[in-house]
Amino acid sequence: MGNKDTIYNKSTDKTEPFVFNETVAQVFPDMIRRSVPGYDSVIDGTGLIASNYMQPQSNAYDLGCSTGASTLAMLRYITCDDFSIIAIDNSPYMIERCRKNIHNSRGSDRVSYQCEDVLDIVISNASVVVLNYTLQFIPPQRRTALLTKIYDGMSPDGVLILSEKLAFDNQIEQIRQTALHESFKRAKGYSELEISCKRAALENVLVPESYATHLGRLNDIGFHDAQLWFRSINFASMLAWK
Ligand code: GEK
Image 1 (cartoon, protein in one colour):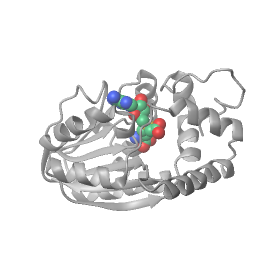
Image 2 (cartoon, protein in one colour; image 1 turned 60 degrees about the horizontal axis):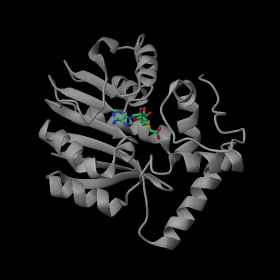
Image 3 (cartoon, helix red, strand yellow; image 1 turned 45 degrees about the horizontal axis):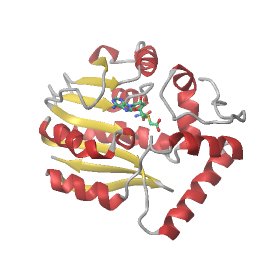
Image 4 (cartoon, helix red, strand yellow; image 1 turned 180 degrees about the vertical axis):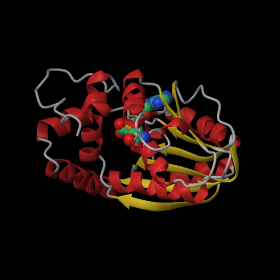
């Protein structure tokens, strides 16, 4: 088991913008499970969905892989022959932990690691692309270009798994969903101070969009049958096919 996230449990005058540094990487598995409702179900589902669409002699990409949960789930489920997984993150601390976590797992020889900005990578021959809670950290004006590059690098019938925090156009819905999310974090043991410091640190760093915005953009790029397969409070996971 990893370390407990206590990053924001002490009062500070000023909260710096959130970054994926060494301290965050150390507590990441605990942090994401106590912050993202439905996280474990989405990770497990990622493996299952990948196993349905992985084509032999093709690549799966785990973009913003953090400590490797989605890659490990794919390794657990995929049964087809001769596939590769490319795990990419621009935080060296995350990639280092990802590599260590996967090192001794069955099929680890199929995984390669890239410490790089997803905006700079080349995607090719991809039958599965996973963007689990990563697009929300990409500047909004660059998201269409990234998704277009992903689409162009995918093989026909390939699947994109896109998981994100959602924003809501309706103000009442936004308030109610935010309140439920905060109750979730409280129930997972975060204090009011931790919740408010994290909210401040993520301001303009994690920029959520509405479900309609995601669906519209995926359709405009050329993906088809874009659809929701999982939602828990204000976090959703979508699928879209080339
Ligand atoms: C999981 N998918 O466990 N290029 C590459 N990586 C990036 C970039 C970028 N431009 N921006 C952010 N990241 C994981 C969880 S976490 C989600 C993903 C969260 C990386 C960043 O370093 C971090 O590891 C990850 O995207 C986002 O299912 O913390 O809420």
